[in-house]
Length: 374
Image 1 (tube, rainbow, N blue to C red):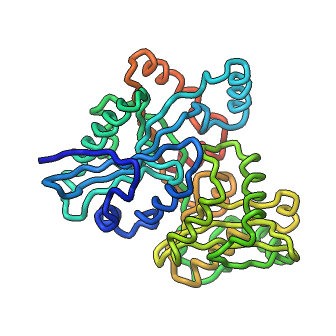
Image 2 (image 1 turned 60 degrees about the vertical axis):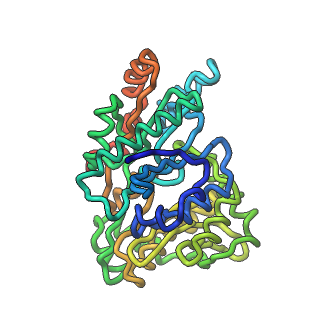
C-alpha cells in the first residue's frame, strides 16, 4: 500500500532513509538540516515523502513563499517590471508552493535505492499529488516544480500528465576538470581568454585562506554578501548569517569558506561544498571597489580549478549566474525547466501568457547562448 505525507521538518524523516534516496549527494539530509536551522526569511519548508508498506520510497524537499514573477528577468525587462511593481504593488507576487529548494540549483527528488528505475515516474506522480494536497491545505493555488533537469523525461511526463505548463529556467553551469595543471586548463581556452587570464595571474594576488570556522569574520562576510546581492539582477532568497555558519558546522569537512585578503582587509569570500567527486561553488561575494584591481572573480575561479586539479576532483559545479564569463571559461551547461499549474483556470491561462515575457533568456544574450548549448 502506498501513502504520502508532508512534514514541516526534515528531522521527521530518518537521516539514513533520506540519504538512501540521494546516494552521494553533497546537498543531503545534513545540508537541509543546516538550511532549516538558518531560518531564511519568507520561506516555509515542507518535505514530501512517499511510503510503501511503511518503507520510504521517494522524497523531495519543498517550500512555500511569495514569488515575484520577474525573479528570473534581467536587464530592460527587469527595469520594466520594477516600474510596474511601483505603480501596482503586489501585482507580480503570488503565493507559491514549489517542489525543490531555493538554495539548490536543481529539483532534488530522490528514489530509494531498492526501487527500480521503471517505477520512478509513477512515484514522481505521487509526489505531485502529495504536493497539491499539501498546497491546498495552505490555500495556495500556484504549484510548481523548480528547476527540474530538462533532460529528465520522467519529470516532463509526470508534469504533462498532471496538466502543468513548462517554462525554460536558468541553466546550471559546470566545468569538467581533466587537466594536469592550471596551465593545461588555460591552454584549453580561447586565445584571447587564455592571454587575458595569464596577464591577470602575473599581477599580485590576494592572500587566500581556507576556513571551516568564520565566526570572527562573519560581520565582514555579511557586508560583502549584502553588497553583492544588491548588485544582482537575479535573486530569489536572502541568506542570513546563520546560513553560512550552519553549513560549515553541519557539513564539517564537506564545506569550506575560502577567504581573500588584501593586507588586513577581507575583499572576497567563496562558500564551497566538496567531496572527492565534485566541488560546488555555493556563493561568491566580493568588494567591487577592489575587484577590478585584484581580479577577484577570476582569482577565485582559478583557485577552485587548481584545488580540483590538486585533489583529482573531476567536476567544478559553478552555479546559475555570470553566463558571459562562464562561456569564456569553458563551462558546459545543463538545461533546467520550471513546471507550474494554478488551480484557478483563469490565472493558469494568464500565467501561460505571462511566461512568454518573463523567460530568463529574453533580456540576457549570454544566458540565451548558454541555454542554446543545452
